[in-house]
Image 1 (cartoon, rainbow, N blue to C red):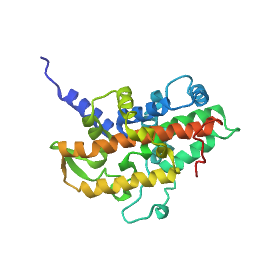
Image 2: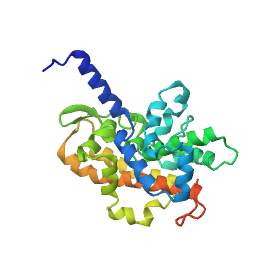
Image 3: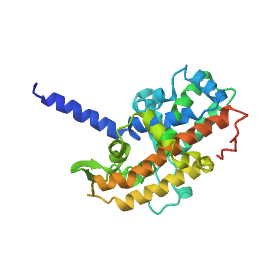
Image 4: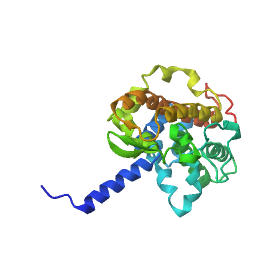
Length: 271
């Protein structure tokens, strides 16, 4: 067997760090996008396919995580999250001048519905929307500014050094199920909540506040120095499944509501 060099170990470590820095991890965004794709009406699917040049929504699901680190799209770095500190009402949280996940979703929807917007602007808006709706449902992306959404909260995961944000992005979802994104979708569609019409009700702000309620519980149950293992995987797997499902169903609802005038669940999406 070949010896593992220090360079190889460094590469492995770097890849792990990159994965842990991604919102929901690649798998989570793929799952959310694929669930959404299964619930597009034929009219909506035709428009989405046209805007994405025939590529799947899943193809673009993780694009923004990489794009935000390039000079061209650096302005989107703060669009992956919305910080609301402990004890601060959602409505009174200081606005990020560079934008946040909620404002990004609303502004991209405006572009997608603007008949005067260019094709390139609409294509970019859709790619961003696909990703950020997923981010809105990752609890630590609605975390506190004081600890960078849990990035500064040091914990151990099965005895290894980690941070609270990173384990929610990737570690817990990957420990929960070793499924492909298609298998995740197939399993989650069997959940009773998938058949509940209330899952798509409310405004974008309502959905953000709903996630923040989960975030508060995560903070309460995971103080600095916690050592998370099997119990925590079992504790939080249902929540992760719920948030993947909500994100996907709601993304489909937003798109159907914008693109299909005959959409049967059509309702006003409050700003």
